[in-house]
Length: 358
Image 1 (cartoon, rainbow, N blue to C red):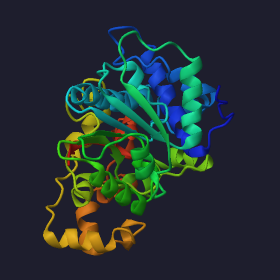
Image 2: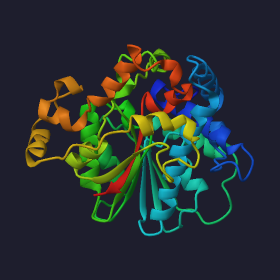
Image 3: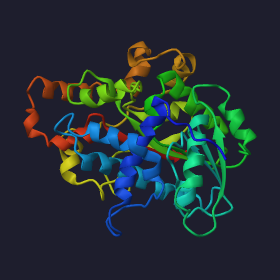
Image 4: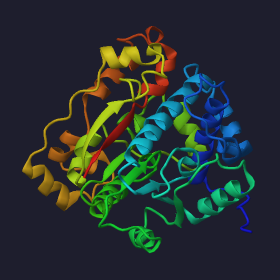
């Protein structure tokens, strides 16, 4: 029997606080909860709940309910895509699977293979949880192939194919809670590599945060400080992930958490989203031109922050408008007390969901 690591490293621990949110949603009564993840509590462990408690109240805007609700919206968005797409796509890749138990809890047909990718110590931890945790729901299960790898290393595609993945066949990629911990060059390499592994008919879905995450932002500061304390500071987000993904080879649609059905508007009360979705909506992504693709091919590995990107690329990936809105709040032009404090979770940073095809 495989020994579980006593302690996950800091990056892996971020998944434990997310699992704590999933556990709290799963433990709501039938008819109220939006999914049931029977493994979430075991995966979260004491650390996940302690960390969650430590986030609550670092700022009056952060409530337990608001943290749980945004995680629940993301989980449900991706659950629905997995169930729908698994009817026709038979290879599913869960990138940075962390506490993901979709292969064990969702109605995925038995002719599917689910590849679960994460750091080797996370894979060992998962195997331990699944071996000792609650039994999987009854019924036929897909084939599950765990694959220990590191997305910052160039070897991960080879490890995936060695686990039985066939790049000549369509695949579904779930990229949840990963991109905010990769540097910009790692992010562009990850998506460009993924595009090469996606045969025609493939589909990707996941989430990113926008660049508010790393701004000198008094409202977001307490949460970012808390993360940094655990050595896992999120890296700059992207305001127009649809453009970043297009440059890497995907056509995706992007929506804000809570903006419409399917993106959590049925879970997230409008009081949490109205102010920014209505008064400060995300602006449409600027159109890409051939020169942007050429610049991206030449430079994407070289810029570690928006400031280092060529200005033409910077203008199609990062918005200046958000900064102006935030500045107005900070200089008092928009009084902070006029903003529902719970907005914090949606807006600072904004949580953006994407889905689309190769």
